[in-house]
Image (cartoon, rainbow, N blue to C red; front, side, top):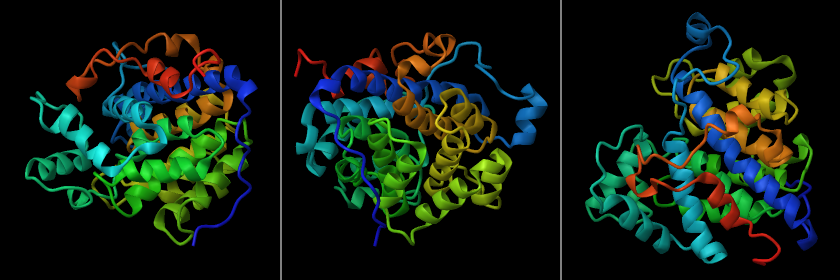
Length: 335
């Protein structure tokens, strides 16, 4: 059974302006973290140091989001359309309409869980059978989970419920738990909750004896000792892939806790730990961006984020992550 925690309050309607600022911070933070971390993906800290020293900003000539940002836009648009009425059938239909039934092009950058899901959907398998592939425990749901926390600000349990519906098409078990932890953490951060409460909200929605919960606790418990300690506490060094949800989510929360919720500190800690650096930095950026708001993101970083290029999902080309944030948290007039 998942542990209980003090759930942050639902924001009052009069706080819509601050909520919108946090929503933009969360999703822009995700895209910034994704772009910062992409060059360091699948690398070890020693390799990062040998190539760049310590990464303190963009190292790519043309920084851009990867599949993490494009899938977050995909899920965000789906959530904006259906809200709390989201169903597995609607998620599955969207996967067909926007991805599986289209000419996808080269589909560069997609993770194993997405490839396995698409192969199953194209074979005619429906959810949750579509999620029965070898990488159902990947961080592919965690990378697109932040929009659910933005939508369900102050309601971590609702964020966790909705992201599990989304994830049932592509993930199972620890893959679902990783997405739920991220969505609940962002939902708590959207209220301005302290770091400890954000972590508690994430732990409250996953089984306490799960791999995800154990890794998350280990990472946060040693976060005060820095990124080397966090990495050592959770990384599965002998495993050839870096997209394990329990590992990636724990690294992201560890980076967030080590930085005390500070945006630059959280994202750069995640980036410099390597492994699945685009996803860990995207999640850390979403958590810290929700905590501090869009104004906390350095302008030189945020200004580099433009509309999605559709490199992974052609159907998402031209959509901007900030437009998704605004759809999920409309202003006072729209309310």
